[in-house]
Length: 319
Image (tube, rainbow, N blue to C red; front, side, top):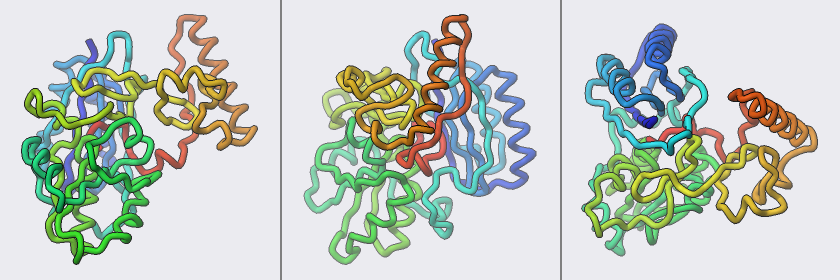
């Protein structure tokens, strides 16, 4: 069974071009698929493949100066789901895009807390609990009482923070999928004068992996940025599908809507795209059907990115 490995670390990187070439060659040799982002601020990635191959690549990454303590999380994919069709190793300005170049999570972040302490924070009425993910992620699952900033991309998070008063909000606790967004979000809030900032260590995915039985406070499923679309509270593949026009998650009921046309539109985006875009989506879907009829795997060109996904980097549970 194919496994999925997610990882990130904020630590200075140099010689990015040479590193990109080296990591790409090593990952290809191990038959791994997925995406790795490299930036001067660190590494962020999600890969799928054989467990032993993933662990061998993790050893490669740990040998990079400054990355010996990088952690890796593993989860399973449904049999027959390749999770990723290709390997991409890219150089970016940020490994998760907040658009605030002065934020330095490698220097300081909020206080990391484990699942037990997190549950205590959820019960504290003095704590503002913030879901730092985007609106379409929050919509399929979150923690009880968490505030949804209603962002369409992580770059909008500073706009939400501007609505808060550090002198009034003494305690803030935040969470995201795998931890990486909270590293930047908590660092940013500390820079804005918030004093007591906590973050769920390892994000939702680590919480679901480690929370004691009977103490799981998570409600719903957790969106992940790969072909699984979502995972349940046992980290198994969830029930959601994805609209390949807008990339939003869809319930089984939404895929029965007249607005849902596979690869072309869904109830969320049927009025968002131009006729030219729809024609492009329809042509790509036609190529997918032809490839399936031949017994081939069609990966084709990337679909246009919606605003909802802008700035999110990779399909990383680490986010």
